[in-house]
Length: 298
Ligand SMILES: NC(=O)c1ccc[n+]([C@@H]2O[C@H](COP(=O)([O-])OP(=O)(O)OC[C@H]3O[C@@H](n4cnc5c(N)ncnc54)[C@H](OP(=O)(O)O)[C@@H]3O)[C@@H](O)[C@H]2O)c1
Image (cartoon, rainbow, N blue to C red; front, side, top):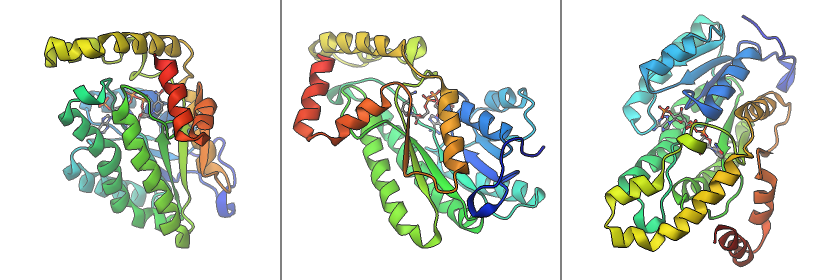
C-alpha cells in the first residue's frame, strides 16, 4: 500500500514506502507511532520482544506495518538478525537504505537513588543507551544510503526528577549522544531530532505502572524503606494528579511524523502535558530549578 499523506519532502522526494524502524512497539508511544507512520505510507519495522506482541500488531491488518521480532535492546545478540531482516525486506520493496530510526523503547521504575535496584538500572542503561547506540552503529550505513534521519523519544527536559532518576539520568546521556551525533554526522546531512515528551498516557503510567511501595518493601529492610515512605507517598499522589492530565500517545506520533517528513526538521520538538514548562526549568540556573522541583515534590 502506498502513501495517503506523504507528499514531497526532503530533497523533493516522495517518502512513500521508505523504511522506518521504531523500537518498543508493543504499547504506548512506540505502538501509536508505528501505526501512525504506517498509515502515512512509511514501511514501518515495528520492533517488539514478545511473540504475543507480533500477533497483536498483525491483527491490526495494517499493510505497511512490519512486526520485527525479537529486539530486546539489552541483548546485543538480537541486533544482527534485525539488520538482516530489515535489509531483506527493504530489498524486496526495491528500497535503497533505511530512511529513519525512531529510538523509543525504555522501561521505568520508581525508586530513590539509595534504594535503586542496580540490576534494573543496568538494564535501563542497556535499553536506553548501549542498545540504541549498537543499533545505530549497525544501521547508520543504511541511513546514510537513504539520506535518512534519526529521531529519539526523550524526556521533556534535562532536570532531576526525584524517584525516577533511572529514566532521567539516561536521558542526560542520550541528550549528549544526540548533540555529539549532530556534529559528527553533519558531513552527511543526517538530522537527529529529539522528541521531548511531557506526560503521555501509556502503559508505563497510571494505574498499571509499577508500584514502588510494593516493590521496595519486598526488597529492603523496613527501616531503610521507612526513611522514604512519606516522601514517596507524596510523590505518588503528585504522579496520580499528573496522570489525570496526560496527553494521548497519538499526539506524539503526529509530532514524530512531522519530524520525519519536514524538509528541515527542528533539533527538538516538545509534546505532551507540561513539556514546555519543564523546558523552561531546564533554562534556569540549577540551584533555582532544583529548588522549584524540590518544593513541588515535598
Ligand atoms: N509516557 C510518558 O509520559 C513519557 C514521557 C517522556 C518520555 N517517555 C519515553 O517514551 C518511551 C516509551 O514509553 P511509553 O510511555 O510509551 O511506555 P510503554 O507503553 O511502557 O512502552 C515501552 C516500550 O519499550 C519496550 N521496552 C522496554 N524495555 C525494552 C528492552 N530492553 N528492549 C526492547 N524494548 C523494550 C516495551 O516492550 P515490552 O512490552 O516488551 O516491555 C514497550 O514496547 C520510553 O523511552 C519513555 O521513557 C515517556
